[in-house]
Length: 300
Picture 1 (spheres, rainbow, N blue to C red):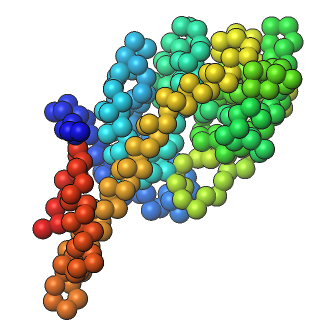
Picture 2: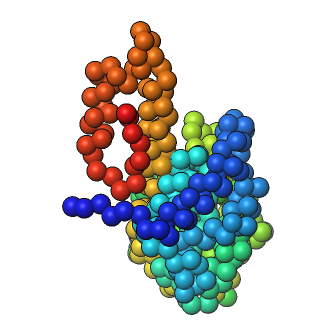
């Protein structure tokens, strides 16, 4: 298998993003890591750079990047801070569910909001169920031309930052996963509250909270697709999300290798760099033999 090199366009885009993040984000990461706070100011500057809504298709006003280009950009975020990368990437996550099952009107409306700097959050996980989407206990009961939502979501990325939520709820508990539905829910709707914010060990620049729904009235027109489509929509949305979720971690690992390599060059007990010691040098040689399409680190 031959590894595809980056195109000139990809080099230009990733170079621009790297320079921006090194200037705007890197100098304050330590301070905000200690605070456990997302940097909204840097997020706003991302909009000035033109990188809001990176994964929104061109037909809905987005840049229409292919998966490889999108992953390369996300790697650059991971090089500087994985926490900011997570919340930045998840800012458009609600669009994926709308794209998977929503009407054209819903797709265009959501895309426009996110391209203008609004933030979405995907409300799936609950205290008793995470990956087990079929175990959802949040309920949505139809009353006339609206639904009444009740339930608690937990570990929600951007739960405290979002302007709009996409919520998974059961409209027919007896049908289990076939009774789930998805709803677009505005953050300022009465009955919504943000619960505790997680004090995490890592990825601390990413906002993670509970979101609580108590007799929340949602217009029936905010249903995505039809009742019972929720499980299919969620699975399809997650399928689109997973590849680019991994990209920042690759960037973090790449930066860790760069730091370790630099240290092995300057740390020189007994008159020579530790990178020349046999056990460490073996690791360098092993890595040098692994083909990669964008590594550019030399241990010489």
